[in-house]
Length: 171
Image 1 (cartoon, helix red, strand yellow):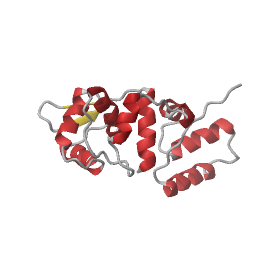
Image 2 (spheres, rainbow, N blue to C red; image 1 turned 180 degrees about the vertical axis):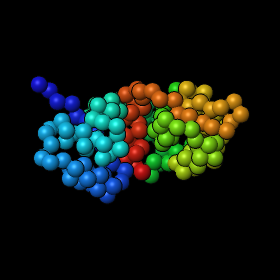
Image 3 (spheres, rainbow, N blue to C red; image 1 turned 180 degrees about the horizontal axis):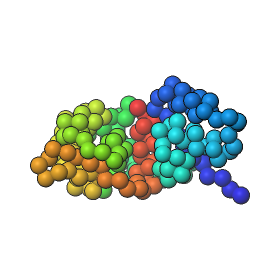
Image 4 (tube, helix red, strand yellow; image 1 turned 30 degrees about the horizontal axis):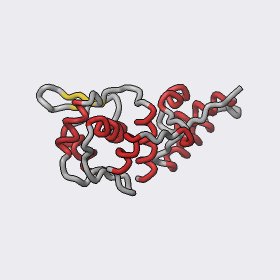
């Protein structure tokens, strides 16, 4: 039986360790394999192990080397900051997935908060263009009056997942 490789990104290792320890301490006996996977996933901030599997990034050795991916990687510097806006619309859409991943899922966010997220990881000075492009590419939506923005929940395609992984690795 083949095994799937599942990547786990842990933003705050200390919080992860405390949460995992609390989950283990709440049990009378050592959890089994699946129960332990569930505890690990929950400690990392996921709903459960199945949720972790659905959003897991593919292994790095499957990294495609398409022209779009190469062009997308060139607009980010070594620290994962977007230094210029890509010329091609398809490359723009691919790059926007990185910012989509930075938006909080399942809740409203103000325009100011969206701007702060975009400014934090771009240096070319046009966060308004990026915010509008997130909407144009179907990655976010906003209320008509602009008071609230929402990330549109969807499964990123393989190239988008690989780009997200690469840029997060640079940050």
